[in-house]
Length: 106
Image 1: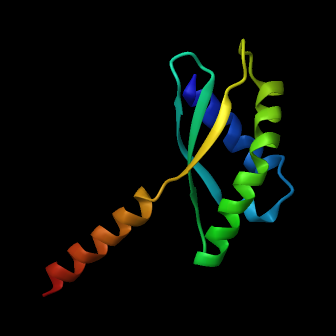
Image 2: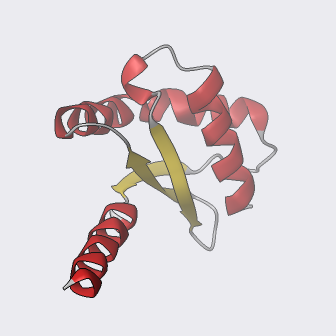
Protein backbone atom coordinates (compact mmCIF):
# COMPACT_ATOMS: atom_id res chain seq x y z
CA UNK A 1 0.00 0.00 0.00
CA UNK A 2 2.85 2.43 0.76
CA UNK A 3 4.19 1.85 -2.75
CA UNK A 4 0.81 2.81 -4.19
CA UNK A 5 0.76 5.98 -2.10
CA UNK A 6 4.29 6.84 -3.24
CA UNK A 7 3.34 6.39 -6.88
CA UNK A 8 0.12 8.42 -6.60
CA UNK A 9 1.78 11.30 -4.73
CA UNK A 10 4.57 11.30 -7.32
CA UNK A 11 2.02 11.54 -10.11
CA UNK A 12 0.20 14.36 -8.33
CA UNK A 13 3.45 16.29 -7.92
CA UNK A 14 4.44 15.85 -11.56
CA UNK A 15 1.04 16.40 -13.18
CA UNK A 16 -1.44 18.18 -10.95
CA UNK A 17 0.47 20.73 -8.90
CA UNK A 18 0.68 24.29 -10.17
CA UNK A 19 3.34 25.41 -7.68
CA UNK A 20 6.62 25.54 -9.59
CA UNK A 21 8.59 25.04 -6.37
CA UNK A 22 7.38 21.42 -6.32
CA UNK A 23 8.55 20.49 -9.81
CA UNK A 24 11.91 19.17 -8.55
CA UNK A 25 10.54 17.23 -5.58
CA UNK A 26 10.66 13.43 -5.60
CA UNK A 27 9.09 11.08 -3.08
CA UNK A 28 11.80 8.60 -2.11
CA UNK A 29 9.69 6.38 0.17
CA UNK A 30 6.52 6.20 2.21
CA UNK A 31 6.18 4.71 5.66
CA UNK A 32 2.61 3.77 6.51
CA UNK A 33 1.48 3.20 10.10
CA UNK A 34 0.10 -0.23 10.98
CA UNK A 35 -3.47 1.01 11.11
CA UNK A 36 -3.06 3.10 7.95
CA UNK A 37 -4.01 6.34 9.66
CA UNK A 38 -0.64 8.07 9.13
CA UNK A 39 1.76 8.11 6.21
CA UNK A 40 5.22 9.63 6.42
CA UNK A 41 6.42 10.89 3.06
CA UNK A 42 10.19 11.02 2.65
CA UNK A 43 11.04 13.48 -0.10
CA UNK A 44 14.07 14.87 -1.83
CA UNK A 45 14.28 18.32 -3.41
CA UNK A 46 16.75 19.12 -6.16
CA UNK A 47 18.39 22.46 -6.93
CA UNK A 48 20.19 25.19 -5.06
CA UNK A 49 19.89 25.56 -1.29
CA UNK A 50 17.33 28.33 -1.79
CA UNK A 51 15.29 26.17 -4.17
CA UNK A 52 15.42 23.28 -1.71
CA UNK A 53 14.20 25.51 1.12
CA UNK A 54 11.41 26.84 -1.09
CA UNK A 55 10.44 23.26 -1.99
CA UNK A 56 10.33 22.31 1.71
CA UNK A 57 7.98 25.21 2.43
CA UNK A 58 5.84 24.37 -0.60
CA UNK A 59 5.53 20.73 0.49
CA UNK A 60 4.35 21.81 3.93
CA UNK A 61 1.71 24.08 2.43
CA UNK A 62 0.62 21.41 -0.09
CA UNK A 63 -0.02 18.64 2.47
CA UNK A 64 -3.76 19.21 2.56
CA UNK A 65 -4.01 19.31 -1.23
CA UNK A 66 -1.93 16.15 -1.57
CA UNK A 67 -4.13 14.35 0.95
CA UNK A 68 -7.34 15.40 -0.79
CA UNK A 69 -5.98 14.30 -4.17
CA UNK A 70 -4.85 11.02 -2.63
CA UNK A 71 -8.36 10.48 -1.27
CA UNK A 72 -9.88 10.83 -4.73
CA UNK A 73 -7.40 8.40 -6.33
CA UNK A 74 -7.08 5.54 -3.86
CA UNK A 75 -9.56 3.22 -2.21
CA UNK A 76 -8.90 3.24 1.53
CA UNK A 77 -11.17 3.07 4.53
CA UNK A 78 -9.45 6.16 5.88
CA UNK A 79 -7.08 8.46 4.05
CA UNK A 80 -3.85 8.74 6.05
CA UNK A 81 -2.71 11.98 7.61
CA UNK A 82 0.49 13.00 5.85
CA UNK A 83 3.73 13.84 7.60
CA UNK A 84 6.80 15.05 5.73
CA UNK A 85 10.46 14.21 6.22
CA UNK A 86 13.22 15.70 4.11
CA UNK A 87 15.29 12.79 2.82
CA UNK A 88 18.97 13.73 2.71
CA UNK A 89 20.32 10.25 1.98
CA UNK A 90 21.04 11.10 -1.67
CA UNK A 91 23.08 14.16 -0.71
CA UNK A 92 24.96 12.20 1.94
CA UNK A 93 25.68 9.42 -0.55
CA UNK A 94 27.03 11.93 -3.07
CA UNK A 95 29.23 13.44 -0.38
CA UNK A 96 30.65 10.03 0.57
CA UNK A 97 31.34 9.19 -3.09
CA UNK A 98 33.18 12.48 -3.55
CA UNK A 99 35.35 11.76 -0.50
CA UNK A 100 36.11 8.28 -1.81
CA UNK A 101 37.11 9.70 -5.22
CA UNK A 102 39.40 12.24 -3.56
CA UNK A 103 41.04 9.51 -1.49
CA UNK A 104 41.57 7.27 -4.50
CA UNK A 105 43.20 10.13 -6.42
CA UNK A 106 45.77 10.73 -3.66
